[in-house]
Amino acid sequence: MITMFSMRAVTGCLPHSLILLAAFQIHGQMALCEKADSPVPAAVGLAQDHSQTGSAGAQDAFIRVSSNLVMVPVSVTSADGKLVQDLEARDFTIEENGQTQPIARMAEPGQVSMELALLFDLSGSVNHRFLFEQRAASEFLQLLVRPGDNITLFSIGEEPRLLQTRTSDLQAALASLMALVPTQSPTAFYDAVVLAARSSGESAGVEKRRVAVVLSDGEDNNSQQYGLTDAVRAVQEADCIFYAINPVGATVEMNDVSLGGQHAMESIARQTGGMAFLPDTAEQLPAIFGRIAAELRAQYLLEYYSTDARTDGRFRTILVKVPDRPDLRIRARQGYYAPRSEPRPRAAVVRVPTVNRSEAPAAH
Image (cartoon, rainbow, N blue to C red; front, side, top):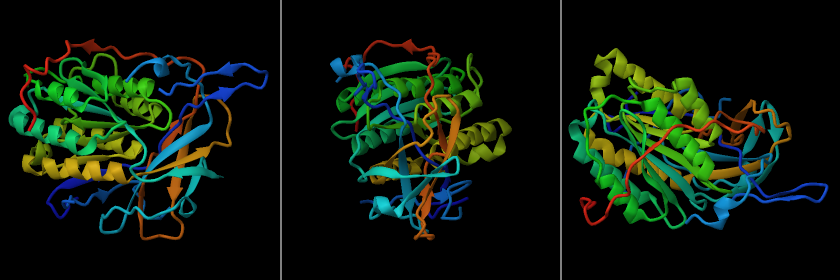
């Protein structure tokens, strides 16, 4: 599908996630909770992108407590792709496993801070315009990140690497980004996605939107632990919205392996309420990054208390509608995993030394 910018954007669907609140047990025991306008391309929706058809410190040491509070980031656009930001909580309805759920509250667009994981592919298949992609990603961070937001930077290569630990220091993140060097290594794409998702899920506190933005072709030929199914589940369990940008462009249609990588990214985006972009040229990257930034700042955050209090770890579907506005397109997560008692396995990570900002190339 082609947008007016001759760019294809594959959109994902349905709502966001499970958050952890402070809880007091009935018998008096207390548990502490971790707090832990330039034009942009219009997006074309697929699948359930339905237009109404149906600084670390004491905070991070707190104990995380499961709750039945569910937080659902929702993107709303008009039929022509313009973001809609004038809706109220009463305009929305939410169903979980087919059962209507009362909406407890709605945060205004752009008012909820963000945990952003940026994944940058360094492998040989995507580095023909590496410096341009690097600068575009730098501009994206400068456009998007605001006080209260946190950034974590990962590289995708022979193995996933944590390049910049969670920080609210934008300049530190930019220095780490601009210090990246392309390689000719194979690609452990799924291992990197699982690592980023689990890192995000473990670090984000109450009322934080979790977002993963990936610059990659999605071609995995070296993951040692995980596959597509694992990556989808990890992103869903982390209540994370997944956006992907494939810098390979039109050549994707010429190669079955490339098509497989693109389809994998589309699948993760579709199931988590994000988008997967396939630009025709690298020159469209700034517009795509701008589109993602604008959407994230315009998202509604709906909250409800699930009427299903079981902690069985099962997947629950979510459907968000605006019943009185059948002309609108609603995009949110397709569901979430209920809390469970057993701990989640950790993904392997390779850390690299912190970047010395004085030695890193300047961000433009």
